[in-house]
Length: 307
View 1 (cartoon, rainbow, N blue to C red):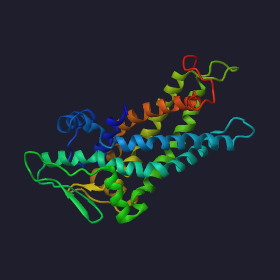
View 2 (view 1 turned 90 degrees about the horizontal axis):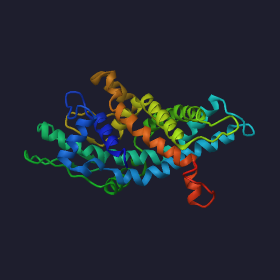
View 3 (view 1 turned 120 degrees about the horizontal axis):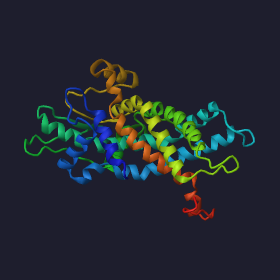
View 4 (view 1 turned 180 degrees about the vertical axis):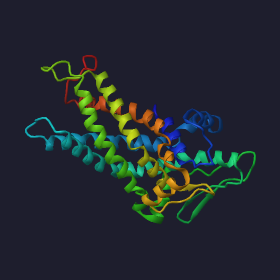
């Protein structure tokens, strides 16, 4: 919840093309969003995110721990290669939830960018096309508006026209992003977190150290895979402006971005993504490691203050 507006800015920055830029940077995007759409405009798509991010992170963290346990020899220390293999498996498992979540969230997050684009450049009339229906912006010069369907409407339309595969558009790009992310994140977090051990005899780590380790590992991995995130965002965006190209796949997306926008386009939203992922994984990792879930279920005598 606390980082969602930054994620919205990231999506809009990644989707805007050269020559049609509405937002200069993250702060400019957030300010313009509040002015034109109100405070809650920054939270478009938050309901989808809040609903699905919980099972997504549960699968990711549990799968990594399960695979680390299976790859270890009698509880012995894992090699870096095995840590990377466990992270790879976790990344593959999470896309079952991640892909439809991102697919729906992106449509809701990016709708405001198209409204702003039409307001600044009235000649560009973007439309949202799903199946046989098209929602076009109003041509009013005073208050251009875009029909903003809900996540449920988008999901129903995709299921009716394209089946379950419609919700999994961009699956390959999601795998291309999440597997390398997990391969980088989990081993890096494990080693950074280990540095916070109180002593050789006491392997416990203070919760604040786990938070910082999660932030550092998350931001590093996020920036490393940002080009893949740009590709995923572009492929999953159903809504296009009049002069915004469509992509037939990952290779086509990469070639068109390189040809029309240059290599720098793959770093769009990198700062925003680092700011989103750092606290997200810092908070999630702390809650997971110190056993809040086990405490809620009554399986441990966890004491937050002593932790």
